[in-house]
Image (cartoon, rainbow, N blue to C red; front, side, top):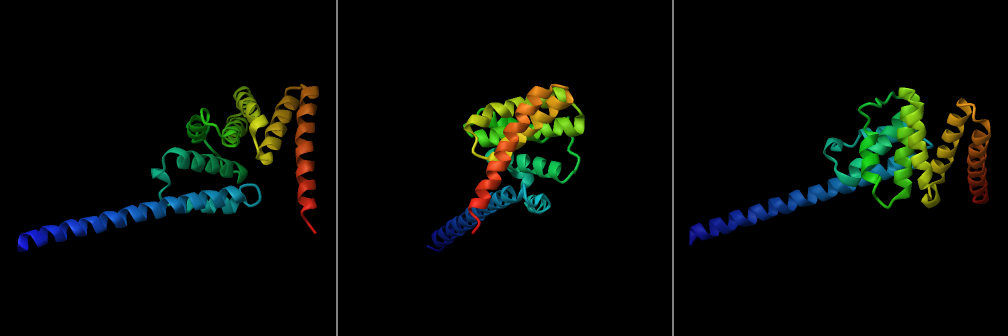
Length: 193
């Protein structure tokens, strides 16, 4: 009957629309993940380019879970690295800290606490809480693989201790950071022919 074929046609059209919508969502999620990955690769060498990539993510307000945590972590770090003031009282970085504090990802957890420490130290001049954030980041170091963050955590702890006239402890932290920086440079040179 004509009404049955019309109803079947409507169901078919709705299935096609639903399939297209799901495909678009999947492609959008993949695009965000790829952009976050690209920004993360550039964060230390070209932070301005990383910032451009992060700002090009059109759905950043709608991110949730890991993508949101990674986005705010990278955006907070890149703003700090590009000398763009980041408000510490309504800091986005707290979203990443909250997300990663109970996760089994030492690199991201350590990075989130490191960036929180940087923001508190630089923009709020809240040295006691910056030190607490850096110390939380330091707890992650034994399980961290990202030596960029490890060296910077040690360097930041060295700086805070130096400013507090705790020179022996500052020296220890600076030595740890230097060892990582020099071993990292040596590793890079070993790969150059």
